[in-house]
Structures are given as C-alpha cells and as structure tokens.
Length: 280
Ligand code: HEM
Ligand code: HEM
Ligand code: SF4
Ligand code: SF4
Image (cartoon, rainbow, N blue to C red; front, top):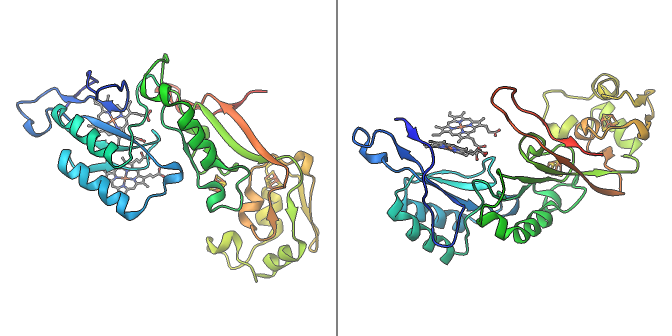
C-alpha cells in the first residue's frame, strides 16, 4: 500500500507519542486504513522483567496489530499499527501499568543509554542515571512539541558507543577518561602466550599477536611492545578503545573519568549519514 504522511491524532493532554498513519488506498486495503504508531518510553538501558514484556504484548494484542519494534533509533518502544478509536484505550492500559508515551515530532525524543555501570566495566559515568534524569527533566519538552525539529539525546559509557549515539543523536554524551590507560603487564604476557583469549574469546584467533593485532593497529601509533613490556604514550591516545577491547583483562580505562559532549549527527538524504562533532 502507499502511506499518507502524518495526520493529527493523539491522546488527551499529549502533543507527542502518537504518530498518525493512513493508507492512501483505504478501499483496497481495508485492514490498514489507519496504521498509527504509539511510542512508549523505554526503561533506561532496556531492562524489563518478562512479566512487563508480557503485559506490553497483551496490551498491543488487545488494541493494535501486535507488531512491536522494541529497541529502535527513536529511543522508544514502537507499537506499530492501530486505529484512532483504539488510542485512548491503549494509553489508559499503558499508564495503568506505569508506562508513559515517549517523544515524537518536533520535540525532545526519549533519551536512551547503554547498560553502563549496571553491567559494563568500561563505563566512565553512570549512563542509566543520566538517561533517567534527562527523561524526568525534559518531560514537558517530550510531551509537548515546541522545537523546530526533533532532538535526541543518547548516552554511552565509553567510546565504544554501544547506543551508536554519534550516528543518530543530536547530543551524544560519551564517557571517557583523562589520565592513563591502566596496564597489567602480566596479563599482557598471558594474552601474548595464549592463556587469555583476545576480546574475551569473541574472535576466531587462539592467541593475540600483540604487535600485529594491537600496537600496529593503534590509530595514533602511540603504543609499543618489545616482547615483554607494553608502553602507551597516553597524551597521544585518542581513546578509540581498540587495544582495551582486545585485551580487557590487561588494559582498562583510567580512573579520572567523565564525559565528552558531541553535537549534531544527522542523516540527510542527499549527503548520507554525518557523525556528531566535539565542539571545543
Ligand atoms: C507515511 C508513512 C510513514 C512515514 C512518513 C514514516 C516516517 C517515519 C519516521 C520519520 C520515523 C522516525 C525516524 C527517526 O528515528 O528519526 C519512523 C520510524 C519508524 N517507522 Fe515509520 N513511517 C511511516 C510508516 C511506517 C509503517 C507503515 C511502518 C511499519 C509497518 C513503519 C515503521 C517504522 C519503524 C519500525 C520505525 C522505528 C525506527 C527506529 O526506531 O529506528 N513506519 N518512521
Ligand atoms: C531472517 C530475518 C531477519 C534478519 C536476519 C534481520 C536482521 C536484522 C538486523 C541485523 C538488524 C540491525 C540491527 C542493528 O544492528 O541495529 C535489523 C533491524 C531491524 N529489523 Fe530485521 N531482520 C529480519 C527480519 C525482519 C522482519 C521480518 C522485520 C519486520 C517485519 C524486521 C524489522 C526490523 C526493524 C524494524 C529493524 C530496525 C530496528 C531498529 O529500529 O533499530 N526484520 N534486522
Ligand atoms: S558504550 Fe562502553 S560502557 Fe556502554 S556498554 Fe558499551 S562498552 Fe560498556
Ligand atoms: S585506546 Fe586506541 S588510541 Fe588509545 S592506545 Fe589504545 S589503540 Fe591506541
């Protein structure tokens, strides 16, 4: 079918969170003459109980198409496809279970984050806390579109950027360290000898060639290895995470940690994806 863009539908008191979609050919496709999207605020770092997921699926079975896209770029769970008369009943059931709509349109969109300190040793700040605080702080801006365009905030605990914020957030908050990468030289030897597997075993290689796989692939060439000792010229490290990801038991981010703010990634159709910039 062909879809008409937009349409003014919503629930009482909210300017965001429901996106109207209507088919251009309602007689030919009577099952999808309306196919509105409901955006539901994700929990920080996407932690759910199975009971909560069952509730959400049951609500959508009762009121919509049953099709969900749970962890998208928007920051929300996307409930795809329902009719106008089902919107208020869906919203009533969601809020009764403690869920809320997220941002859409020319508004603050629901912030999202990586698992951060809840599970990841690389996290340089508490991503879940920032995501939660930003969500609370921007409630008005999320529910009542008052910007010229959408605005997305995404929070990653380290430069691995597991929420891909540099490619798809207006404001990326990326955890980083200022001091030196912590090195355990005996663990470096264990990687070189094959007792420790590269990248926690997630590569096909039985053992790491520290020179070929790590130091010579450092993008700023600030590392060296003489067969016994690994050295890093930390002032030239750009925190790319390559060496740390390969040898997580030997190398760790420093201890003087914080975050870098980047602005402005977007995906214009003509020029293609553009990454966020650090504004100095
Ligand atoms: C006129 C029709 C439609 C238009 C103009 C439209 C437009 C959009 C836009 C602007 C976004 C947000 C992208 C962003 O994150 O910034 C989006 C997201 C999305 N749309 Fe549509 N859409 C339409 C119909 C549909 C239909 C019919 C479906 C599925 C049956 C669909 C599935 C999705 C999904 C899954 C996302 C979420 C992507 C993500 O979170 O990464 N859309 N759409
Ligand atoms: C064998 C079948 C399929 C495979 C192997 C597959 C694989 C993938 C992969 C690799 C991604 C990218 C995930 C990421 O890194 O962000 C993705 C995203 C996605 N897929 Fe599929 N897919 C399959 C079928 C489907 C079907 C049948 C649908 C919908 C009816 C679907 C809807 C989506 C959507 C909406 C996303 C974007 C999620 C987001 O918003 O980030 N996929 N899929
Ligand atoms: S972005 Fe960094 S801190 Fe967050 S989950 Fe990924 S590796 Fe861990
Ligand atoms: S984090 Fe990247 S730039 Fe820094 S020392 Fe390791 S490989 Fe080199």
